[in-house]
Each structure stands twice: as structure tokens, then as C-alpha cells.
Image 1 (cartoon, rainbow, N blue to C red):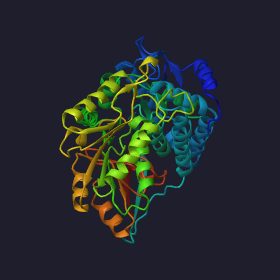
Image 2: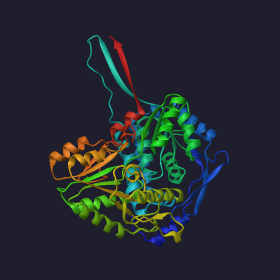
Image 3: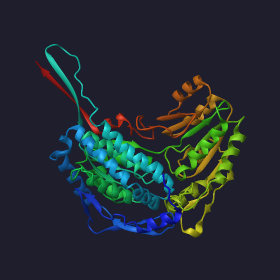
Image 4: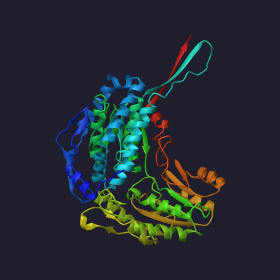
Length: 496
């Protein structure tokens, strides 16, 4: 937990020297000379300029990963030895925790306390968990005819391209990189152009921890060029992506147009959070609903952006959320006391404001927020925003906003609540609040979502898988199931 003052963090942030080069084949490489600016959303100022990967740089990184996989030691190490390297990565990440947290806060605007205590904790735990898991996987020898021996082995899939977004730049990178490395794959990681600095640091730390050259390469660049090059590259065997549904479709097309690489997608969400009158604690349900939508500035694919609340308790719950929204401390993300920081940038702020304007034209009632705040800082800050009287067919109720905007919809019976919850193209997550065990089981099964939280929200650990249904994607991050994305099953039949 951070135990420093705002002034201390400001001084330390100014002293940071973020990396600016790609990290390829174990070394820093400036690329072909092209660069782009990384702008901090806390004040609108340029942090630095980083190398901008084109097709040549991506090809260079993939070639390094290909060599490391085809002829390097990493896929051939004993799993326990791979695990020890991943545990060493976790140790070095812990040593660099404050530096990484400050970098995340500067590049994408989340409160530094959240970056340090939540984002970095998740990253470190991910590398530690997969490091401990690496030698716990076993092959199979099915019982078959007495004159034959059957073996089912799980082998690393090859070169993995990982494309991750800016909202959790290190957590989501870790969820893809750590299991891929544990499986024996090599990786080319492309972070968002909004948040490349922390990922470039991750690459350097991993090499320092003992990853052989070419095993983890990090290239910074924009999606339409660098991301496309990864998606279409014939030497990339697996592409893992977290981001928008629209971009996910592009990666599927890139696969079809190239080598039919496997594509694993974790995409958008419009998650419902259902509060029934028999919730064990309505005040806690309301507080959790408020935390869920305003945490990380609402920039989460799992954010419970649709609150479905029974009409008999709707006023009480909504009033409690509005009170909390008005109490939230929005401010400099480098201040440890800040509860909600800046949205990732001006263009995203404008996009979220456009959704708010649309909600007003559609007839929803604005209860609080809705306006830009702290404009004098130069940062991209928005007030926590709550709408009620939201029509179920409106854009406010259907489209992913990816900001601190809550839509409240009232319902009268449980069947209606389930219909409303499932009336979306997404299926990433959902919440349910009830004291009735039978209701909890029946409704959680009826909800079309990859994760259902009952009497909580955003809880869990690395033992459980995470991913979506419908247009929220396929495949799973976290847990031992994530290894299924980065391995191939081979059957060997030996006639005795």
C-alpha cells in the first residue's frame, strides 16, 4: 500500500525516465525512426515520444520470437525451470512496483493508489501463479487396447501475438503473457498507443529476470499498422486480443486472410447488475454498484453499467448511488487521496460526453454529473454520472460507453429482469443480489454471461477463468484454462 504524500509522488513522477524504444530479442531498439507522442490525461502534457512500429519492426520482433521458439531454449526447458524464471519476473516486478504504478497513472490516468494496490498486485500475482503452475500440468495416457499405448501431450502452440488495451495495461498484458510463457510459447506484445510505457518496462524487467532473448518482445505502435501486421503475420501462430468488438472482428478477418491462426478475443460488455428486494444488504448493494461503475473511471469492459433494480427499492438504491457519486473525490491521479482519476484522453472524453448527450435526447433523466470537470488542469476529467428512466431499447442502455456513466432501469418481476439483462449483444459479466439460494442458482444460469457475481461484484482470483459469451468474445484468461489458448494437443498412438 502506498504511504507517500502527493508532493512526494509528484517529485518521483518528474524524475521518471520512461523507455522509448521497442524491446526486441532482449535489447532496446529504436526502430525505423518514426515516433509518436504519449500524452498524459492528467494534464494534457506530452510525457515522451516512443518508437512507432511499422510492418518492418513487427516483422523483426516476430522473427526474433520465431527463432526463440524454433531453436531457442525456452520451449525445451523443463517446466519447473520456466516456472522459476516467471517467479523471478514477479520478484523484480515487486521491486519496481512504485515505478510501474506511477508510469501507469501518468499514461492512462487511473488513481495511483489503484495502480499500485490493484493493477500491480494483479500483475505480480499473475506471474507468480503461472510460475507456480508451470510444472503442475500433466499429460495423459488413456486406457486403450492391450497391444497399444496412447499418449496425449500438451505442447506449446508457438509464437503468440498479444494485443492489449490501455484501461488495465499491465494486468491484461500479464493475463496473456504469463500463461503463454508458462506453456513454453514466445510472445510479441503490442500495447495500446495510449499506454505503451508500462509494457515496455515489463519487457525489460522480464529480460532482466532471465527470459532468453526473443522470448518476450514488446513493440509500441498504433493498431491499424502494428496491430494489423501482427494479425496478418504468417509466423504468428496465436493472436490474443482484448479490446473492442469492432477491432476483434478485424483480427478474425486478418486470420482468415493469412495463416488461419487461432484468435482469442476478450471484447466489450454492457454488464447488468440486478438488485432484488431481498438483497442481503441493500446499502452494500448500492455501494458496490457505485464502486463498480466509477472504479477505474468506468473504463472497464465488466463495468456494471446497467443497474436493473426492482421498482419497490429503486428509489432507495438510486438515491444512495447518487449520494456516493456526489461524494467521490475526482482529482489528480497522482494524489493518493483521489478516488476517480482522468479518462484516458480528450478523444475518449468527447466520446463519452457524446453518449451522455444522446441519453438526454432519448428521454433519460440525468440525476447527477454529466459534465466535464477540472478543465483548468488540462486533464480529461468527467463527473460521475447517473441516469434513470432509461428506456431498454435506447443507445444508453445498449451501447458500451466505457466511462463513469450508470443507466438505471427498474423492473417489476424476475422474468422481466432476466429478459432485460440478456437483451444485449454482449455477454461478459453480470451481477445479482438476492438472499434466496434457489433464485441465485436459477438466475445465474439464465444469465448469458461468462462471469456472474452473486452478492458482490468484480471479486475473484487467478483460480477462476475470465472471458465472455456472444459478442464479448471467446476463450478464457486466468486459471489453468488459459493454457488451453497457448497449447496444442497431440495424440501419439504406439502399436506394441
